[in-house]
Amino acid sequence: MPAGRRGAGLVDAALRDLDRAAGAGADELHIVTNLPDVPPERQADLLEALAAKLDLPTP
Image (cartoon, rainbow, N blue to C red; front, side, top):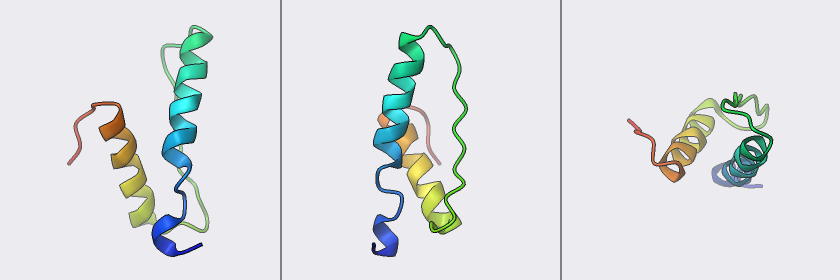
């Protein structure tokens, strides 16, 4: 997979996890990006994309 696409499913998976957690009554979820094949800069981009989907502030 090209470097720019590595971790592409992270945002969708995190959103599904958030929905499942909310359905179970959780009010907090910790998301850790420890993707060995994904450069740290790309991991930061993915977290920013997730924040944008959740309407959270991004840098």
